[in-house]
Image (cartoon, rainbow, N blue to C red; front, side, top):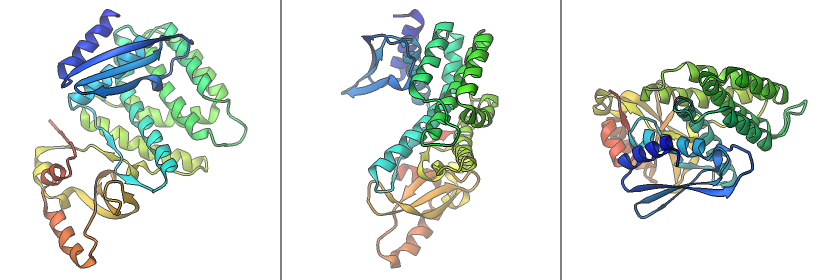
Length: 323
């Protein structure tokens, strides 16, 4: 194992409540695909597996860094507590939101991997090959693949920014030119979406969360411009809050508004009500009021008077304490 990768594995094992292991398959197709990594847990063991040897150290390093960031309470996580009662639609929305979330995390992990020497000219070539394998070239008019081209090219621009800082500026510029030629609409939209992420200080949990919320909103703006259906991840996705002690001790009414949703609570199968931040309008929690309409006024009065910390604890939702 690459010594640097072994160091990352040791870091993960220091914070994981068990044992983290890695495994790489025998195939080698020359394609770098970040979605190939699979995680499986058995008892207290976590196996991170990459089926293909192509730039496997980069893929494993990315997974280990994300794991460490999560377990150290640095990066907000996403949860899916709502359903449209349509399995295919739910899965599509989960896939989209997960890719958006990971793109912001990649702005941290790709840069760190570049610093540690994992990102080379071979990595860039394999990454471009992976993009071309996943996507067809854009047609003249918007089609059913435009959204996923945008998601892929968005992540590619985060990757190329890391490559640029790794001393591969000329190669990164060539790849960007190729993306612009093959996927002009996706590249133009991705440039607008990626700029705030790359400019942000992503060492701060609050800023990381802010960029996630901004990307959820920005994607819908891009899709509207392309005349495609929006994702509305601000409502669909529950995102870990980053709160000060004062905010945690304060009442729910200080920070959140609770709205009736057209979606269903995934667990209770009842009509859901979503608690969204007054400032960022992002889903932070989901509640189900009593079925009896007569009991609902008391329920919501007590909900708004409850402290934020008490509510999150009751709902078993994690939060990040702002320093």
